[in-house]
Length: 296
Image (cartoon, rainbow, N blue to C red):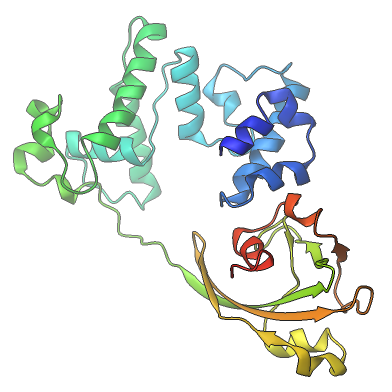
């Protein structure tokens, strides 16, 4: 993150950069949609809002990557607007404090908690009190009212907390819907020349690693073989399988290496050869970068 912040120290620098440059400095941080949204957001703020972020949560929420709770956090912390946040920490604090045990996987119950959160907001001296209230709520959830083993004795809300009175803090918040993570196997063609050029293409959007540069990906080994001349098949080298976990998916990556003379082969896939001094500066998924650097 330090390299990203140094490379894009202000909104204008980020807005005028190419997406490739943005993704290159974001490489290895994961959640690449965040980098794409940051870039799009910077462009829109500079183009449509004179380079200054809107001051209301309603308008902030229209920007890429900024949802209702994030918009409220910005508006309350920066501009003193009376709007409620409801991130994971805030939900936990409020559900425990209120004894709100409705299932939060149900939309109507989420809306009811939003209403409770709004009713509890300060009403006076908002420019001073809203930033303090919002930051305090986030810090309370992060450091005191934690998911497991909350420190109720240190909590300033303990005297009025329903969950504390019943000693049932860990029952809140209630949510029955669990994250379902699927598994997918992908074969990677790691094609390089003796002079350290590598064959890369930019991934389409939407899809895995959208917008990043990557070695060719295949659903199975037979599809990978079909992209190469039969004469190359015996020279292929299988590297150990890599497991890479995304938010909703576990990827099992099967790298297959092939080294060829410079200009000696062009696979039947989109892409181009990138010289050794060029590909390290591209936006590459973390496991692909490790593979190319020989650390797969």
